[in-house]
Length: 115
View 1 (tube, helix red, strand yellow):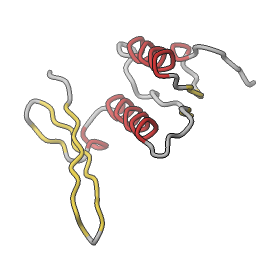
View 2 (cartoon, rainbow, N blue to C red):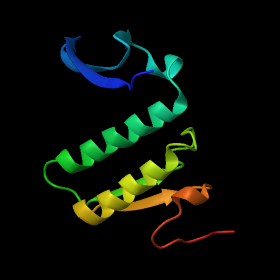
View 3 (cartoon, helix red, strand yellow):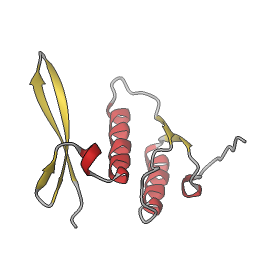
View 4 (cartoon, rainbow, N blue to C red):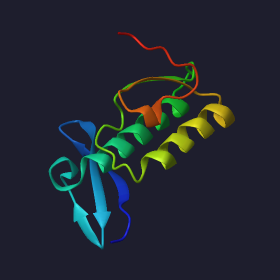
C-alpha cells in the first residue's frame, strides 16, 4: 500500500481556529486517525508535530524535546530509520532529546538507566 499523506485542515468555528488532522492513503481521507490507523503512524506524526512546534516557536526556544516512549507502537521494521532520524536531527539541527524508553533500539547518546 502507498504511504500516508498527512494534512492539517484549519477551520474557523465558534470564534476560533480549529485544526482537523487528516491522513490520506490510496486517495481515501481518514478523518479519525486514532481509530483507523496503526499506532506507529500516530507515533511518527506526533513526533513530527512536536518537532515542528519546537522549531517554529517564536521567540525561539531551547531546542530540547522530552519524549516518553514516543515510538512504542512503531513496527520493528521502521525503528532503525527513526533512530537514524533522531541522530541526524540531534547532529545537524542541534536538537537535544531526552527519551524515556524500554526499547534498546532507541538507547543512544548518553544513556542513564534507573533501576
